[in-house]
Length: 125
Image 1: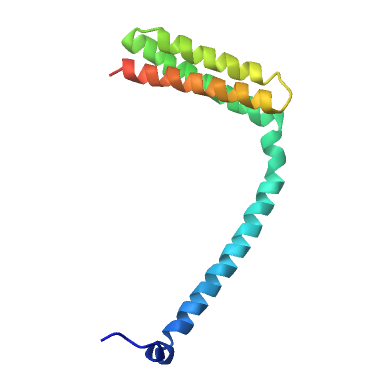
Image 2: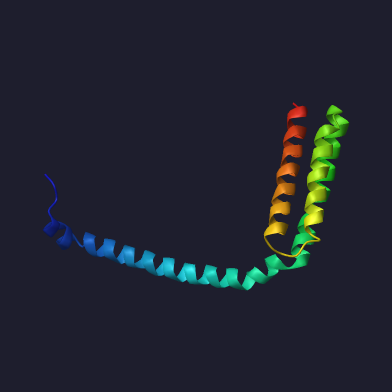
């Protein structure tokens, strides 16, 4: 037999549900405001040249280790050559002004680098 609305009201279930929904609403509003505030403050960091330069440096180091290891383990140079091309495009993008063109070249370089890593992984199987 289904529980009636009156029984839910008497048991306080609807009140607890309403309180829970209100609490989730407050949490959502508070977290959204805090996250958006932090992103606005941190936005300058992500546009800083040092952020891009450090990211490229890490990509070069990881690429050199992973792709270089692949050459020594499976003996194929093509994955390292393709990955190096991607790194070069990414490095070239650093010389451009911030904008659509820089983003496009960076994404192209990242995609080519990822292809090099994928080929490296497949060659090592």
